[in-house]
Length: 163
Length: 259
Image 1 (cartoon, rainbow over the protein chains, first blue to last red):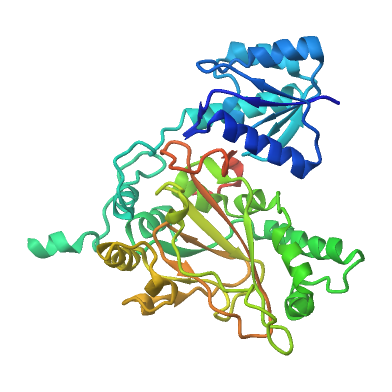
Image 2: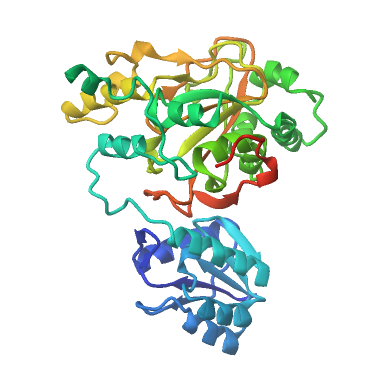
């Protein structure tokens, strides 16, 4: 059983995780699970296709792959299709999500979940300095069906008092 | 409570509400998870097959066993909660949500006979959930697996008052100073204790200060809690590490909830 850990582009999802830290994560996880790591595969930056991993698997027969997150999976459906075709028999471990599985259904589900997170905007770069900023955002949350909500009579009483 | 009223309460009003499960029978799944975890730990069929008797005897378990119950991975619990409260989730966040991947299970265990050997079983200290990096649109659903007719559950402070307390700390250059943790900060006395019957849950915004107090009764308090938010609203620092995608089954949402 050959196990590989992958250290890929440090930027994935909302995080920047340096290669060394990815290796710390994956190796710590492997130790916790009683797994022996046979190789570390460095994937290049500016790429999420995991082509190096697929090439190595073709020539060296990987059985198990440890990735920090399913957000490191390819973004493009065609890249993901190729990965599934080449690695559908490999057991994937997505450590941050704590998910383990094998096969087309598992990888397809992981890809769809990753896309949902990628397609959701992030407040990471919003100009937030304190909890009050977050609180104001929450107070303006839209109704889930998109309709405007009538403000309750006691909402923002300070403005009423000024009138 | 109508959907709009609930939405107003959580996002515009005091920030919390007690809601009824749409499908309370589903909550039995949570009770079974706890009972099975006790069975697993003891290695034999546990005589305490009912939650009430388990609550009365939990303080007799060794600390190691209690820790094992607490650290057990209740993988199914979050979805069980979502299946029990689809109307609440749909009304606050729509049908396409991010749901906390693994619900938290929390215990508030009375002291064993002779008192505690140590202070490991501290009550939950005052905090609000936004401190963890969830987005401001994430709502918490906190559900006891038994009637909650005493003060061993959760106390909560409305969100406007909570923000006043936090902003007073901020003016002193602090976040969560000792006054809040020790419950000495002005206005902390405005806390109220949520009391519920089995089949109800407490929903609250991430800006309501809450916590629990030491359990001075003879029964343990057992609850599960999970968090959810619309997939159409931004995430903050917690993303795929914390949430997974969940679609509320439309058939499970009670009639009249149209969001």
